[in-house]
Image (cartoon, rainbow, N blue to C red):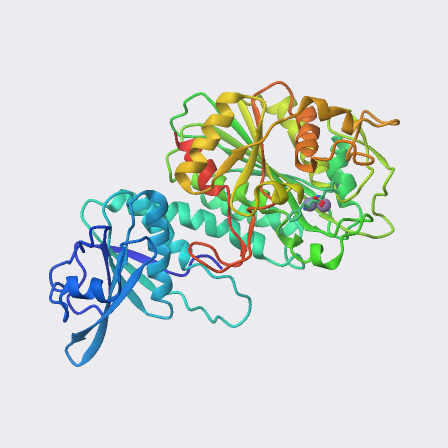
Length: 476
Ligand code: BES
Ligand code: MN
Ligand code: ZN
């Protein structure tokens, strides 16, 4: 379910509002709007009593009389007021208002869009069945000249929420066909045409990796292409490629239950691509963008691919499948090869929950970027830092390329043995073989794609990591 909170903009909060949030900074200087200024306690005494520091996420609640009713003023800290602090502050405010009909927020100074993002993402929930939503129904943002920023924050937050919704959906519903339908619907609403290859077309056109990964499932694979044409193009063309494994059982190289039960989110990269393509027009992006989502369900059955099978990818390269659980790179290889051969992009960026190994290296807070081009890597890292989707550049270590040698095919999909190790790096080296000579970057989001906590802007489950990063990069 998308964000259920609706928003509105006002000059100042109504004087009889029952729940009002007011910012204060590190000097403990609150921005008390007219009508709520008469707090029943002296502000300095209040801050002293609560040992307030002005940190982002800190909230002090003050009961106030509203005629016969009792209202509350939430004084919220904004820390140093940078976008990361404002995101955190916004999430803290909306979480404190859970279950309320309405909340009126005096906007902080600075990057209002980041604050609005925090409010809306902090209110995000995913629940199936009887609608026990606790999200605040309506938030009023009070400020002057803030329309554009509030709007931008809302577009970004709703795009992130869509990516979360798609990834959180159980795989019993979310088949490749379902994902293609959702992509078509969503993109259609935003003037972005969609083309979908079914399994026969995929086989006929040589997408051997997508076909092989999908062949064990009763739900056939799909390749989804979304084509954004800007009204006022800048002449650049970017291709985004998302891993769209709707469930990753591991295939015949079966995962243990503990590792399998999170794998409905193995299409998180594809969800990001769909969400990004739907937001480009509203954000006025001038670059032409093509999204590709390689969607398949990696299952076991009598028709599943076997360890030792050899597949032929788009463009003719052969790969020996030594581990059917290294399936992401197989579907991405086809899409990357197709983008290089047919789409003439100026840059290609793929995004994928590709390896458990990257979680060992970078943990759950920072995503990995590998790139064949320093400028592209630098731009993505910068965009990640600004938007709160932090990225760390990882090396494509040339000495490890023998890890992917096969005795029977052009490449093997995993290393036989563990001479080289470095599972996320060797996966990136595999993808590089299919990306061609154009600037290419690969984001491994296996660590950051899911959150284990319900806190701040995150809800347990899918995070939508990458949506804000890519939208910010494409909006430059
Ligand atoms: N989808 C997984 C990666 C993953 C693991 C994502 C944990 C999110 C959380 C991927 O398809 C996979 O199974 N990778 C293998 C690769 C190995 C077989 C070389 C892995 O990481 O173990
Ligand atoms: Mn796998
Ligand atoms: Zn996978």
